[in-house]
Length: 54
Picture 1 (spheres, rainbow, N blue to C red):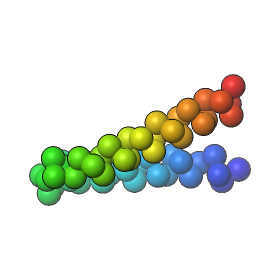
Picture 2 (cartoon, rainbow, N blue to C red; picture 1 turned 90 degrees about the horizontal axis):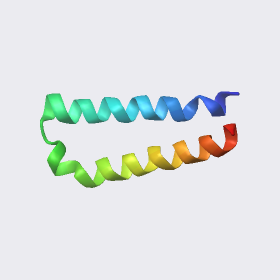
Picture 3 (spheres, rainbow, N blue to C red; picture 1 turned 180 degrees about the vertical axis):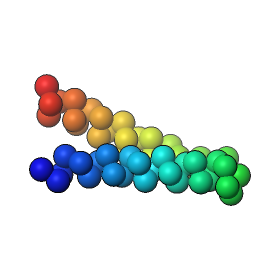
Picture 4 (cartoon, helix red, strand yellow; picture 1 turned 30 degrees about the vertical axis):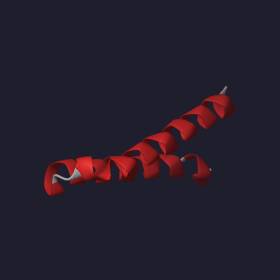
C-alpha cells in the first residue's frame, strides 16, 4: 500500500525543490537540466500510474 503513496512524496519533494530554487536561491535557470530530469521522472510515473489504475 505504501508503494502507491511514495511517488506522491517524491512529487511533493520535487515541487519543494523547485520552489526553493525559484524563490530562495533564485538560480533555477542554472539548474534547468535537473528540472527537466525531474519533470521527465514525474511524467513517466504519471504514465505508469495511468496504466496501472486503468
